[in-house]
Length: 83
Image 1 (cartoon, helix red, strand yellow):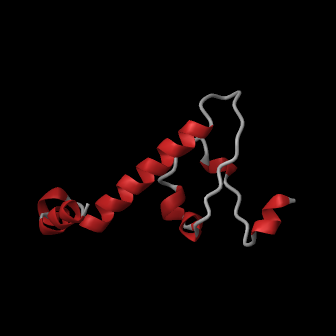
Image 2 (cartoon, helix red, strand yellow; image 1 turned 90 degrees about the horizontal axis):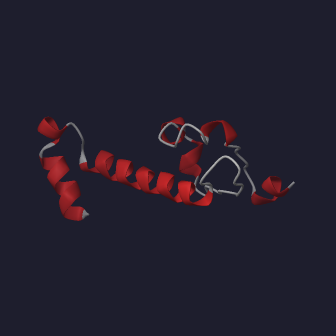
Image 3 (cartoon, one colour; image 1 turned 30 degrees about the vertical axis):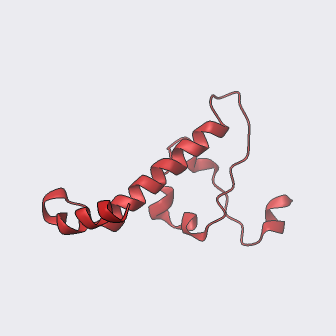
């Protein structure tokens, strides 16, 4: 991962992405794959908890699959989510 990030940093002008941007894309792709393993079709149900404040940022929410975006609810404390 370090060498790949370094490669992207070195060639940002031609690749159009920095190493940090590339890493974020890869991480968010993995998140979307994990969400898809919980809920596979419209009749499934499950809970996905994004326990990271970065998912409150619109830049991260926009990278999530379109079908899940309208269902995102933000809570400031875990106890608030239980009610």
